[in-house]
Structure formats: C-alpha cells, structure tokens
Image (cartoon, rainbow, N blue to C red; front, side):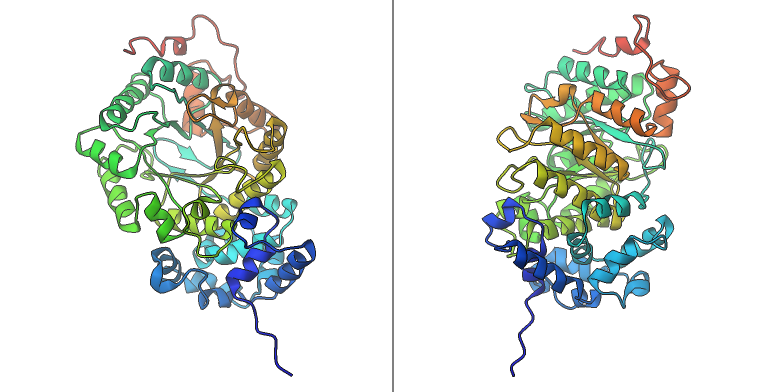
Length: 453
C-alpha cells in the first residue's frame, strides 16, 4: 500500500485557518468546515521542529525567511523543542506558561509556529495566552507595564491644518490619551509638510513638558530626509509585511529599516529609553501586493512580526479591519483576526496594539468594535487608537475614540503610562485615583492651541 503524501506546511496552515475572505479570494481556504477541522487535527500533530526545516516561503528567495531561520534561538526553543503544535497550544494555556517563561521563550518561537498554534485556539484561548505576556518598551515614558493601557492620539486632518491637528490633540489630552504616541498620518507626504507637522508637535510636547513622543507617519525614507534636515523626529514609522516582495511593494528592505533605526537613534531624543521604531501591519497586505507565495494571510501577518522584532520597536499595531472586506469580510472575521494578531505578536515579544477598526463598506459596525475592544482590553492589549468621535476624517475609516479609551480604563481599572499619568494629574486631567476630572475654564491645557500658526 502506498503511503499518503503529507501536505506541504503552507497548505496545511491555510486550510486550518478559521474562515476569512482573503484566503477564499486567494484560493487557499478549506472548501468545507469538515476539511478545515481535518486540517486543524493534522496541524496539531506537526512537530515544531518541522518549521525549522520546511519554509513556507523559500529561504533562497526571501530575506524575511532568512531572518526567521538565521535568527532562531535554539537555546530559547529547547524547553518546547519536543512539542507538536497541539502540545504547544495546550502548554500555553497552563500555569507553567507564565510571563517570565513566555518572555524567555519568545526568541525560540518562529512566526509559523505561533501562527499554527493560534489556528487551534478558540477566542478565549487567544485572550488568556495574550494576557500572560508582558512586553515593556520605553522612549519618554514606559509602555506596557501591568495595570496600564495606552493610547495613540491620532489627530489627523484632511488638509494638515496645524490648528486642526492641535485642536484634536488638545481634545485627546483632555481625555488622558496620547501616552503611546501623538501620531499624525499626513494628508500630503512632502518633506516640507512632514517637517512642519513634526516641529509643531515637538513644540507642544516641549512647551507643556508632556512625557510622550510624536510621530508623523510618512515613509521611512522621508523620515530619514527629515532627520538629515534637522527635524525633531522622535519615532520612525513604517508599514511592514511578511515577505520580502510585499515589503518591496512598500519600498523597504531589512537593510533600509536598519539604516532608519540607526539614524533615528542617533538623535538620542528619548529620556527613559531608546525604542524608536513604530510599525503598522495588517492581514491581507501581502495578498493585495501579489506577494503572498500561496501562504495564508494570517501566517504572513505573523511573519511581519519577525521583521518588527528585529528592530526593537516602541510600538507595533495591526490595523486589523482597514484593508477592507476583501480580506476580512465582516465583524466576526475582524474580531477573530484582531485577537489572533495581538496574541501572536505578544508571544513573539512585541509591544502589540490594535487599531480596532473597519471600513465603511465592510459588514461591520461600532457594536462589533466595542466587542473587540473589550476582549482586547481583557487580553492585555498594549494600546489602541484615540480618534475624535472614532471617525478619521482624513483616512475615512471608523476606529476607536477618546471616550472608548476612557471606558476601558474605568472598566478594568487601567492607568496611562506612569510618567504620563503623573503629568495628567499635575495639569488637572486626572485626580489622584486616576479618574478623569471635569474640565474647568482655568485648566491650562485649554491654552494648548495658542500660538499655533
């Protein structure tokens, strides 16, 4: 009798993935629920060591694969080296897998191992495992400490009007948002405009002694040009993906990201640490670039976290519903993907945030975002977005608001980063217990927009 050949890992990973529209679009998804369950059962029996010898994207063709394989820490991997995927999943749910143990294990896990284990998890598993991971980063404040919940203040404006950006920044600060970063997506990507926004944000932070950092989310090469022109750059931003070809579609390589890291660190603008990179990702980016190599979108997303890990970022977030319903069709798929991304990123040792969001043509609404936001908060998500009214008037998508961040902090008794929380108390935004204080006409934050031209 002839033995049945075992399917390639990338085929098994794809068919074991919970249903999502992107894998259907790529022709990779299981055709039926029965086929999906059979693939999950087969994947559970795969030894973790197989992932070190069978690459889902060829080693010779892809620098991300080479980064993963060449950078693998065999000593860190040793405690789980005898496990199968199913055994890893089961062990992650035990008390033996505590915060210190998971932190020590992270360099020994490859993205494909982590993605595989997550495909066997229910939502509650993803939440529990992620809640046990602790990743702390620092620049002008300390992000990711137990009992904290941070917010990227996103004061985008459709014409990059400085007064409009300042007004939204003031609004967010009055709700205690902005400890992760004050980060602007520019409407116009010219170098002069990037410098203009950077200087304005730096002026606000300096003038009011705010222990946070700013970032203008332009291409990494533009940020480096701004640094060369003497701009006050705190963080260097870049969108990244899980294959060399997909990163090339973003105009980046590992060598370019290393150059950007060194240029940004050379400014020495941090006060409590020197984590200077900010990365954004999202399931479906490699497929949309025609650079997926027949690999499912969730596995490729986790490979992007290997790229991020290499550069010791201050912040990483998956913009989970932003790419559109072609990749995550509805609220159910967005919710699952957000919890997967957060859990997998944390297991790999990243300071993971999530842009809890959807586009207006997706089958999703704000109730779906409320559910995902609450589940992520219980899972220990590092940060979310804070946007006026949860409606980004420049990027035209729906996310989370300043009020949503206040809801999470009140519900779960979470505080901002400690340095930022102390500043908020000093200027009268928070009381000594960490609760928001009603704004009074004499509050000096109300003068934040004065002098903005």
